[in-house]
Amino acid sequence: MNLHSVSPFASYITLQKNSKSTTTKKNITDLIDDINKAIKEYGINIVSHIDIKPKPTAKVKETAAFHLTEDRSVSWAGTNLINDSINHLLTCFIDTEFSVIYVSDSGIKSAIIGFLSAGRINGWSMVDEMILTHAFIEGNELKTLWLGGTHRNVSIKPNSKIISGSNLNDAIDPFGDSTYIAGAVRSSVAGVSLKRSGVWFGPKKDWDSFAKTAQNLLAKLHDSKLFVEKLPKNSLVTVHHGLAQNIYDLTSVSSAYQIEFADIETLKGKRRKDKLTYLINNYQIDIDQTNTSINKEEIYVLVKKIIDNSFCWLTISPEIVNKKLILKFVAPIPKEFNEFVDSIRSNIDFIRIFYDSGHTISNASLSYSEVQDREFDIEFKKFSTPTMTYEIKKEKPVGNPPPIEHIFTETDNSLFKWVFKEGLTQLGLSQPAKDFCWLYCDDRSGEIADFIHVDRTSQTKPKITLIHVKGANSDSDSRQVSPGAYELVIAQAMKNLRRMSSVTMFEAIKSNVSRHGDKRVWDKPWAKGLISPITASQDLLLALNSIKSNCSYEVIFVQPHALKSRYLNSQQKQSSSTGAKQLRSLLFGAKAMANSASATFRVIADDR
Image 1 (cartoon, rainbow, N blue to C red):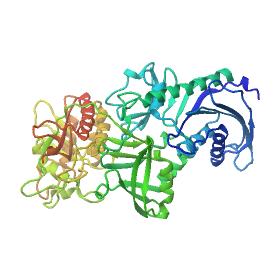
Image 2: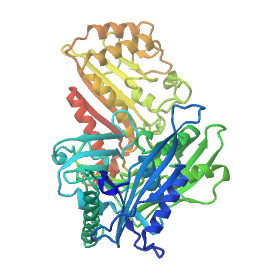
Image 3: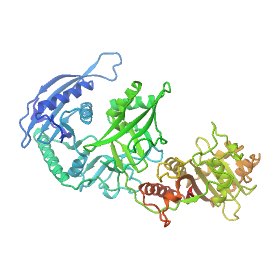
Image 4: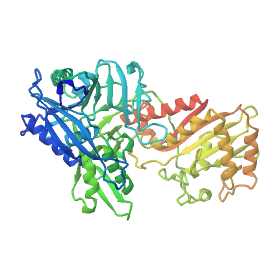
């Protein structure tokens, strides 16, 4: 091969010498040995490995280049033994503190990155994201952002997205984009894969320009490292202030409230996607929020095998070492769950963990979403009476399906009963009355809301109120304000809010009443043993058909998790805690969407 004539696309894996390593290898041969181990372990069949012996690169300690030939079976062959012979170029440039690797094949590249991220390239690690950010992103125009979500998996918000423009610095939405973190960035000077320690520039016309680009890259990394080392302790170099930021300290992290598998489509490489698919199909994971006997940094996780419902409790202890997130599993670990534990240990980005403090473990790192705080007036109502204390964690009567008729018994203490018996009055809504006002329970799969209140008592303008109900995460008198208890119910409601400005919402209400209204429409106030009148659903349909565009809408969230004593201080000022700020940001976004659909928006919580 005439190396001078090659024209590679300059896309490099960047490596940084381990600061505390006592076994750092000092020559390129040892680095190549580890690369070859990665290639072999990933099942890539290299049948020829020719050392091209390039000339030295100026100001670079060592340079190497190899022509690899792979024997790869073709995907369409079936049982036929048909292979392709594929040629690859592998190059390495090694300096005193950094090295860069180029490989022309994406499969081999994934194998090397897998070894590097697992700490198996001896003496080397991925380059500190702050070094990459300062070198190629900070202060430059942002052209493309590959964003990964740090929010929960909800239908109203993508788990990941790609945005492009001439300059995105002013295009980031501090409300809508604050729960996304940059995994990769293309700036005006280079493309940077922060999570895979990669930098790319574009095609080069020959070997000399390619090697010169590698030389400049090493020099830039060295200068950036010197800059980062001089920063004050705990300083951050960020992609954009409106995005979520990486955090390298667990001190401010509070209790975890949710764990879930990552979105398969956010992963790179078929091998890793297949491994995560296997875990999702074979295991279920959940957090035990009632366990308070362990440190706040530790997470008590229920892991269940789907095939036989066997389960175990695992304690996960996150740690950050040299800015790298590590998940430690506290012994003992049942041997039948070793497969799950080993997979997560070596692929931290397979899971996402959410904390009440607003921190998230996602994309193999700890991040925090800085919210834009604005006041939001939550309405605090009483969930107890002289004769009844409602169970604020209990959304509806227990059963499958839930026996809605139980809300008309003296013993039921669910929030559904509270809405009808106590809530309508406290919320200032009219009591159901024949020919004028109806309450319909739409609780089911595909619901519009848990309750729909239709009021025609006004002679001028009818009103439709959608009431969403969600049980509190905890009934403790010391529970903290957090967005976690509100995320899913807000997401469900916002999905319907997007339909509110069109006729589809109104038609959906009529369709649901027509199909499911029997025994679930009431035109009388709450009473023990109340039964839905036979004519109530038809009367409601007639009323809905008579309502034209001149109708007002209201959306009410009943979620008593937030305590008045925690949300407001002694001077009745809204709390400045992280959880309260993040809750306000979440609610403000929902309010803005409701207002855009000409609907009023209210949130109900616990008066205590």
